[in-house]
Structure formats: C-alpha cells, structure tokens
Length: 381
Ligand SMILES: Cc1cc2nc3c(=O)[nH]c(=O)nc-3n(C[C@H](O)[C@H](O)[C@H](O)COP(=O)(O)OP(=O)(O)OC[C@H]3O[C@@H](n4cnc5c(N)ncnc54)[C@H](O)[C@@H]3O)c2cc1C
Image (cartoon, rainbow, N blue to C red):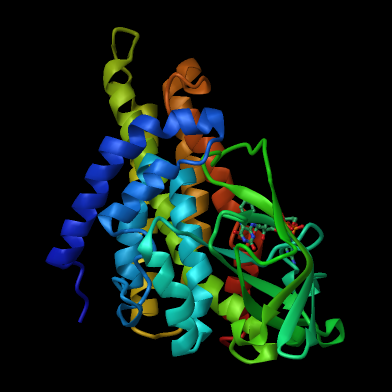
C-alpha cells in the first residue's frame, strides 16, 4: 500500500521547524553569510526546541527520529539557510556511524552526553589529498597496548574541532586498501588533536569547516566502532543514509528559490505588466516547481527505504544527485528572474546559488553519485 500522507506528529514537527526558520533563521542568514561567524545561538535554540541530534535513539534518551522525520525537518531548515542546516546535518553525519556500528555501551557513552546541551558531532573521512578516493587515505592508525595512535590530517570537516566527538577514519594497513581502515571516536580534548578553521568559502559560510590535525593522538581501543577492518564499510553505509538529508536540504533551498522568484515576478514590471505575465518567466517558475516536487518524492522514497530497512544505496544517490542538480538550476534561474537585482546581495537569491554549489560536492560528488547509480544499473542485468 502506498501512503502519501504525513502523520500528525510529522506535520507538527514540520510546522515547528517552518515557524522557527521564518522567525529565527531567515532574518539572520545574510549576516552570518557575510561575517562567516558560527551561529552558536541558533544552534542552541535548535537544541532548546529538541531538534538538535534528534536521530539519537531513545535508548540513549534521544528522540530517535527516523529518516523521513529528518528530511521533513531538513527541508524546512535549509529553506532558511543551507549553511546553518549543514551544521545540524553534519552532526547527524557524525552520530550515524555510532548508531550503525557502535555497541550499546559506546552509544550511551558517546551519544547521551551530546543531548545535554547544544553539542555537535563530526565525521572525518576526507583528506587534503583524497576525497572521492577515500580508501587512499593517509591518516594512519597504529596500536600500542590498549590504545590506538592517530597521525595525519583530515580536510573540509564540518563542525571540525567544535564537535565534542569526531568519528575519524584511519588506515592501519595501507596494503589492505579499504579493508585496512578503522573507524574510531575521538573526543574534542584528546591531546595532540587540533584544528584550523577554513576561511573564504564561496557559500554556506555560516557552517564551520576545518582541517583536523592528529599528532600522535592516543585514544582507547574501546573507541573503535565495529571490527578493526570495517571502518570503510561503516563510512560507506553512513553516507548511503546521510545523502538523503542532503537531498532534503536541496529541496528546501529550491523551494526558497521558487518563493523568492514568484514574489519578485509578481511585483516587477516590464513592458507595462508584472513579469509573471510573461510566458518565459512562467516557464521558469513551472520548471522549478516540477523539479521540487519530483526531487521531494524521490527524497521521501529514499527515506522510506531507509526507515524500512530496505536497500537504499541507489535511491539515496539518485535523491542526492537529482535534488542538488535541480536546486542548482533553480537557484540559477531565480537570479535570472530577478535580473540585475538577482546579482547583488540586496536579494537572497545570489546566496542560494553560492550555497547550493556545495550540495553537488559534499557527501560524495555528483560524479560519484552517477557512478553509484550506473553500477547499480549495470549489475542489475
Ligand atoms: C564545505 C565542505 C564541507 C565538507 N564537509 C565534510 C565533512 O564533514 N566530512 C568529510 O569527510 N568531508 C567533508 N567534505 C569533503 C567532501 O566530501 C569532498 O570535497 C568531496 O568528497 C570531493 O572530494 P575532493 O574535494 O577531494 O575532490 P576529488 O576527489 O579530488 O575530485 C575532484 C573532481 O574529480 C571528480 N572525480 C574524482 N574521482 C572521480 C571518479 N572516479 N569518477 C568521476 N569523477 C571523479 C570529482 O567528482 C570532482 O569533480 C566537505 C567539503 C566541503 C567543501
């Protein structure tokens, strides 16, 4: 049976996030974009609403939200600011490997404390020299008694250094390639662990991005998630899930592009009439609407597969790739609808284009998503 309706709880949550976005995120987004400052107060307010780290399971005193719940919220937050949403989303990215592969003891030890305040998690896979080819990582793990010792650098890590816990992927045997990787939780104050904030991002400037440096960082073996050689598998299983919220963010951003365009087109006059009476402008609005609806249903479908424990690698790659390409086009067309005014920051649409570019790059570039989808097509023969 196919059911296209949201539950009453989901509708309430959607309303809560929509109101918060309208009242708190939208009015402040441009200022954080300009200053590159970290929106600490907003993160604290999301925590106060109970919606920060809301995927943490009930067994750890969390809300235990499912993927469909998560994408409903994600669309709303990203409508206000994709960069601010990325902070929240990256914390879920950081907790997901623990939820997927941690023991009950590890879940309680690492996840329960996160809920006590506006605390964040991070996920550290990418490196200065390897992103798409993550198995070629250079960060090394060696063993000493009951400890793991980490050395190396991670690059582009959202919430990096701010997060209370970071799931770090490191190679203990490069010859084993992806089978020689472990996933381990590193706490913020571990000696030898430091970070350097990355400045000058094109968009999503409210999100915090850092390079992480591991200089003989010693963590107990008890922090290793799953079996020692399972780290790469844990990373891939995590990304298979967390690409769905990226798709949701893209839908939210595209919805904003459409709303801004619709409003502007109803007010701006050309040749004696509002430009929304010009057919080529109407076509742009219609294309945006078609893209948003299509991407949202693919996102909901991928979320439904996740929630029902069904294979979702292909569906989440389609959702992420399609929704972010769609949102990129929507943001680009929103600028076109605004004409010259779209090109300056007096209107919010130029920020949408700068922000959405990252959705085509992180959590696996859209080229990599197309490889994943093609692989699934080819091997289905
Ligand atoms: C602001 C920001 C935040 C981020 N947050 C995080 C985070 O929290 N945690 C984390 O681990 N990472 C994070 N990343 C890293 C991100 O996931 C990587 O940038 C991304 O995976 C691409 O890796 P790369 O930059 O090394 O590009 P490369 O892998 O060097 O790719 C360069 C180009 O080559 C293409 N390419 C590479 N290999 C192939 C192939 N086999 N087939 C087709 N095309 C290919 C790519 O698609 C891309 O167009 C973040 C990045 C940014 C910019």
